[in-house]
Length: 442
Image (cartoon, rainbow, N blue to C red):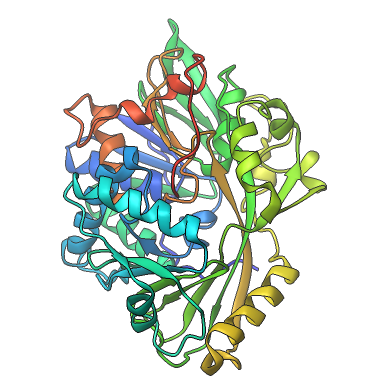
């Protein structure tokens, strides 16, 4: 089920101490570790499975600024700038190509929203062009869709998730970061009311500063220490194909499916907006703050009870720092693809692009996306426990904004001037009664 991902070596010897310990080897943790090392800090990354084993290798691979929540736009802009120089900086292939991205639609409300967004984004120096029906058709040659318009960003791009995060991790190792895979963090140790270490299954690392970047597992880890972090997981389904005729060099989003050209000549296919919401103790606990976003999306979701109520990142589990943790019992959260969504996508692909009607699936897989109530990530210190920081809740945006998010997290952790205004991403907004409003664009 898991998509193939480039494996990197582990540093087997756990350091006795480090300036900073990063928990989680996905894009959020690895980019933060890389930037912290560039600042001269000693950093250890502990990962319960392997680098990029969960959502960081299961996403669509879009690196975009277009249609971001405006509060997130500057961070996305900085991220795309970083992506542009990443191959050269690392001396490795991340798959990034600045090919542009196109959205097309048959829904007037989409076009109205994109027009409003484009007007606001221009004030932030964002190049984005709202497309007429004729322009949308011209930018999707071979498609049969009756598009009434769209939006195009020529400065956006795409990268290969299975290559990119491991390449950044190897770059971090060259800067002195130690990376410890199959080494779950069981919990934090404290002294005098602040962080003093990280207890792992292989021993304790002494540190005064921790960044938890555990994706969908972050809320469970924080809850272990009496810290609320409202996150909700939604199961996604994606697949990638064998080499196929080129319909785009970048990415195309339609109302039902998305296409992203891969380096190998195939496509990564995503199913727009659809997924599976399983009933879980964590989901029920945080139902109230998620009510607005639930109302916005529930018609496209399958809702059911299942194994996740008793096991996995949203279950209600207890353990001690000296006992086996849930993170060791499930090294990689690896849900299957929803077959009905795969069938739906294949049907729509054949209808929209008849030349892809016989497209061959090479790999299909599920994932779990960690949403916050306002669909903005938390990149922040947690004042309740000095020394603790969080970078999680990326709501489906984490890969694309990863380089910028990693730099922002590193700035916050190091106490340096932040690359962008960090206030929209502060942890406190989720727990202090702030009115989060309606979730913005994804």
